[in-house]
Length: 339
Image 1 (cartoon, rainbow, N blue to C red):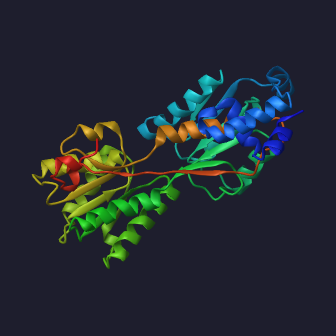
Image 2 (image 1 turned 60 degrees about the vertical axis):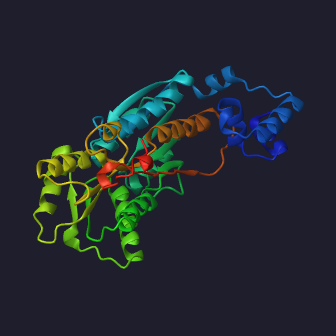
Image 3 (image 1 turned 120 degrees about the vertical axis):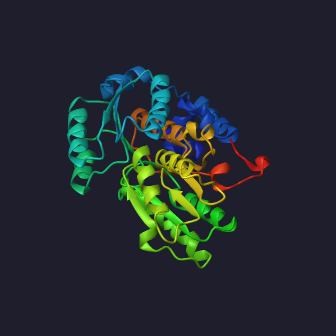
């Protein structure tokens, strides 16, 4: 008797049976009751010790993130860490600095250490490296959009529609000259955010000149510099969508120094870093459910590690972002503020 037979008899996927055993809070009561009933009928008990011997578990997983100083990536790491602790596993954390060569080197090093699984955050691997990773027969999960989403379990967020919602709000608030500040990395995320901004503007018949799109390294200082450049424009924007909260904090510092108010230039960030709720003006931002992304990726990975038989096909789980409206976009109605 194995997990595949339980899944077939219960009419669910192998992943669902695994979640009933490991993460029951992720399964509906109706489904959980049906699966447990079948397990009882078949007298099925997972042989955890035998599975551990068969797979030579090390109780260690690897995790690659591009920047250990960036809060959103550390929130993702915290989410993965919570699931790993529940599974009595340790994490080897590596910083790739958005460098494909560093990333490739770490993948090789970690897989040679026979880790139980691997999570890659904002991966920059190419087709050759991806094929090499798959050939090593080590479970892995990707966090962030890639060209390999149909071939690997992936957790991401709706950056495009979230950015579209943010810019649409600015336009409905009366803003017409909107500029965009994007970060250098990750490219796929920036592509989605820019696409969403363009859709919102086009929907309202507004243009986005190339001169109104700036790129900067994701630091407070570079957000300050990029926003300063926009203030120097002859046709100074009345609103700016900024791809990260970190850069938006720099923009707000410059806004205050210039003696300007959100009524004159609205600012919206992206990530929902905690400090955004205490600076002045408080930052309107788009949430990025980083912690939940980490937990979801962790659960997916351990589903793969713990299953006895061939798993279902790759899944792509998209977690939804939402707009948090605060003072930096010129909102004066305190009842509408979302903390």
